Every structure is written in structure tokens, then in C-alpha cells.
Length: 341
Image 1 (cartoon, rainbow, N blue to C red):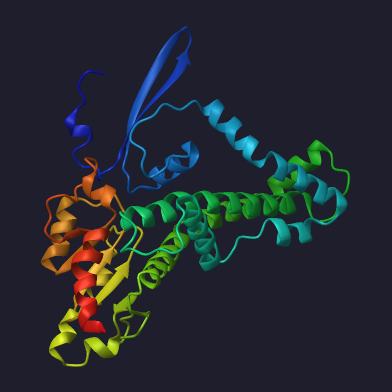
Image 2: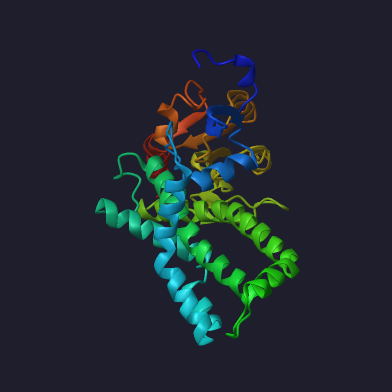
């Protein structure tokens, strides 16, 4: 391929994928190409199957190597699971070795690993050179890897219990196959639940990381405060009482919302704005330029990781309503804190 057809890419979201596959067709080698929109469910499947990280740009993958690497990662756990089933202790094993931590606990484990890796004591956005990239690394790489490992274990044990039961017994291959077919609706529900779990986890987790960074920087805030009927922003800085005080300094207060991915959900946040300044922080690389302009027209400021502002694959650069997290902390938060004291 020497030239890409523009019509194939004209309607794709930023940071979408061009996938080229090679396979044997008789004695010949055949190639197939397709595009995958970054906002689609297919993109989520692609990222999971190929173990692609958020900073990925281009790569070549051998499926056999990927499968072998995944098998190596779970080899010890598989042996432990088999032993637990034979011992009749799989129920206890599920609680002790295969339980998914609560969202807040998992987020804390991910932050702990990040702090250890970088020799830091806390997430202080005024000390960390690129705080937005730190949030992205914690939520999209470190925690995602930890979550996938926990989920793999949890779902594997559930699948074994569905097909094999909790009590050990001799089962022929025919009995295992028959049980798998009979329990297919439960297996299907299990897989659907796993997909939904992946989607719902990310948003709540990102809020926990933002909260930890506000605490780390000594930034005053209130979380999930009801400001009007059905309006509960993620964070109010410094407090609801302050922004409603009527003092001249009240204008320095702001609303901060956190969304891992945006799509059309930024419109929900816009309704929380009222008369106050609204900043929306995200690690989503898939937002088109026209959506960013729409947000600007409603007075919504975007706060993003530093690497997303620099990336050629995104459309954030050049928009006045887009700030990096470092710019937000140094240019918006730090000056305002003098009035919040």
C-alpha cells in the first residue's frame, strides 16, 4: 500500500485504528485491511485481545505469541484452581484468591504501585512534572492491567463452577461438553457481565484518582454535593458554601467533573454548570474537534493529559478551551487557592 484512500478515514473518530491481517490462502499469502473506530465496541475488543496500551501508535502482532504470553501469566493460578476444585475448596478459593477488589480499593492499589515505581510519597500535581500523564498512566495502564488480572481470575473460577460444580467428581469429556452446552445461557450472561464490568469500573476509578491528586496537592474540595435537584457534580472547589457566598471571591470557585471517556456524556456535565466555571477532565483521546468546539460554546473547559495535547493522533491542540492538567493546576488552581484560604 503506497497511498491510503481518504474516504475510508473521513468519518472515523480520532485515534482510530487501521488493522492489516495476513493469512495463507492456498499457496498464496493474502492480506485484509479494515478500519476500527476508536469509540466502537470493536475497538475495546481489539485493545483487550492484543493487549494494546493507551500510548500505542503502531505495531506488529503474532497471535500465537500473544496467547503464549497470556498462558504464562496465568499458569500458576490455573494449577491452584485445579487443585482447589479437586480438594473441594473452590468456594473458599474464590473468596481468597479470585475476588475482585472494590473499585476504591483497586484504585488505591494502582496508585500505590505508581508511587513506588516513581519514588513518590503522594500524588501532588504541583510537584509531578506532568500530572495529567500520571493520571493516565495510573488509570489506563497500571490499574487496567491489575483489573484484567483480577477479572480473569474471578471469571475463570465462576466459569469452572458453572460447568464443573463445586464438589469434585470424575467427569468424562462428554459430560463436560454436555454441561457446557446446557449452561450456555449462564456462560453467556457471565461474559456479558464481564464486559459491562469493564465499562462501569473506569469512570468511578478515575474519580478516585482525581480525589487523591486533589488531596495530595492540598487543594480544598467537596465531593458529590447536591447543588440543585438532580445536579451532583463530581467535585466543587473549594466548597459549595464558598461559591454561593455572594462575595467577589466566589467567582474563583469552580466545578470539576471527571469522565474517563466522553462521547456525548459531556452534555450531562454541562447541565451541572449553572453560573459557575466548569472544567471537565478526561483521559479520552477520541474526541473530535467539532465536539470540542461544541463544548466551548457551552462554556465547558477540557482538562487533559499533557501527552494528549502533544499527540498528532488527537484533535485537542489549538482549542482555547483545552488545558493540560499541569496548566489547569498552575494557571487556574494555584492562583485561586490564595482566595480560598
